Image 1: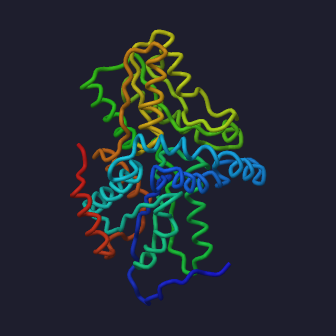
Image 2: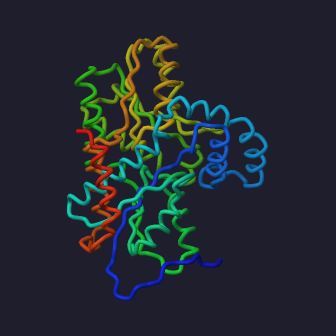
Image 3: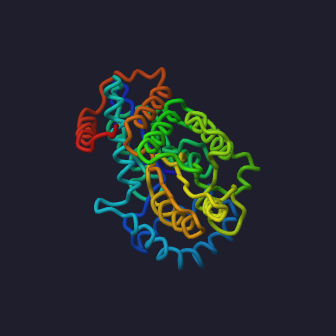
Length: 363
């Protein structure tokens, strides 16, 4: 495998550290063409779909990519903003605020964001960091709970880039932060503030993204980490087992996925006479299609149609100050031992800090 062209090495150059904050990805536009391109990359990842490659490619290109893009594009259009994809906007904002917070804490590092699928790619950002003279990179997925379908896939992208790179920066990886005390506190604060204004529900539903059940039996720890997050959040909120329910959403295909499923559970609650449910998605660091459309639109309609009286969606952490503080704490922990006082790319930091000030963090 040929190596890519690299910037010349400068003898005696100071070590420079970067944090690469990685999220899943999004189409470039809410159009069938853009969604098709995005889905083709996403669903071709063997981490995402673990069935025999040849069979899956026939299904993907012969069926799914012929019919799904138009339907998915309509869903994306329903949550698209004038500035673009919600997921991209929040990820960019979080990276800028993380840069600002780490700088306040005395860490002279560069923070950039990337997407596993679509733009801006992990490889392109690693190229840019290397061109800026970065010698150490902390790869930080946006996913609190580890899964081979998400976290490991981010790592795969880094490894694939490294295979084509001659002088590889020192790399570290954040596997998870599902039980990090500050992350749990941020979630708890978000829910508590919402309840202070709107009151408490009959039931709090904690909806996590689903994965095929077979991944659990093959050794994936995602299921356990979701339940631990839920248990710790419930404890922080002072809830007993009857006051909350863990569910899994976004099922794809006919295979059995982690249960219970979110929408059928909400329908059953509505039919059983539960009047009000609040839904929070602790596995998503930022609002996106799966929260804004699947939960706040589709799941809402399903619950109300089944007899429920009141449905409340509690937004993801997004740019909440407590959330940024939690991300900064996780990053700081994983940079332990690195001298983060070395001079970074001051231009990149200045740009990120200016963006952070322009965006502003919520309290």
